[in-house]
Each structure stands twice: as C-alpha cells, then as structure tokens.
Image 1 (cartoon, one colour):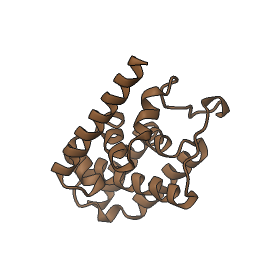
Image 2 (cartoon, rainbow, N blue to C red; image 1 turned 90 degrees about the vertical axis):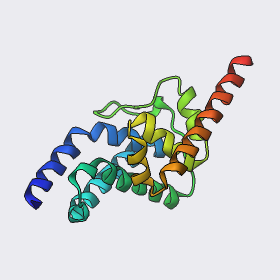
Image 3 (tube, rainbow, N blue to C red; image 1 turned 60 degrees about the vertical axis):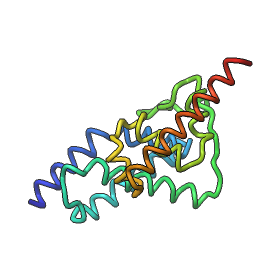
Amino acid sequence: MSVIREEQLTAFLVEEQARFYRLAYSYLKNREEALDAVQAAVCRALEKQDSLREPSAMRAWFYHILVNECTDQLRRRKRVAFVSPDTLDAGSYEDPLPPDGTLAQRVDALPAEVGTIIKLRFYEELSLREISAVTGLNLSTVKTRLYTGLKKLRISLEGANIE
C-alpha cells in the first residue's frame, strides 16, 4: 500500500507543480523563495508520506504542508517584499499573478487568515472542506472568513471604481 501511495504522491506532485509554485509565489512575492518553498514542501511531503492516512485527502494534506512552509519563510524574513514582475528573469516559472495586479494586491492587503482562504478557494480551487483541512479551522470559520474577505474585496473594488 505504501508503494502505491508513493507513486500516487509522486504523480500528484509532478502534475500540480505549477499550481504549487503559483500559491507559494502569492505568499512570498519572490521567484526563488517560492521555488524554495515548493521544494521544501515536496521534501517534507515525501518524508512524511506515511502520515497520509487517506489518499483521497492528498491534495489538502500537501497544501497544508505548503502553506505552513510559506508561512515559516515569511516569519523568518519578518517582512513582505513586493517584487515587480519586471525584475523576474525569463525561465520556466514566470510571474503567475495577473499583470495588472489590482485584484491580487487587494487580496494580499487582506488579513493573512482571510487572504489564505481566498487564495486556496479561488486560486487553487480547493473545496471549503479541503480548506478546513489545510488550515485546521472549523468549516463554519472558513465560510465566515471567506464571506468576510469577499465582502471586503467587493467594497474595495467598488471604492476603486468610484474614484
């Protein structure tokens, strides 16, 4: 069973690597740090694959590891550095955020606990139950924070249209 799980995990990690990078970049705003976070999360997942009880929960399990790794990196550097897309060099991983950045910047401006839920829901298309598993929050808390975040985004965007 462990061999099948390892093969499933490896296939999942390879297939979804661009999504993982996009999520890490949305947190870290730095190409190298995002790549490092994904690599560290993949290593941690491979080391701890025996802790995965249900193969059907693999997606939420890995996102939990990746979000924790990104949060740890942010904590280590103690600040958020915004990087202009112009400073990214050409490579296999480009800036995954929209070029205008307006919505992405507004999501980043939300409190971290709300922004994480919005990123997981709309950038990564996780279900509310999966988000609950990733964040360790009660499902009703996830729903409340999602609603609150979307309301704040709507107000923010409406305010931008008035100006």
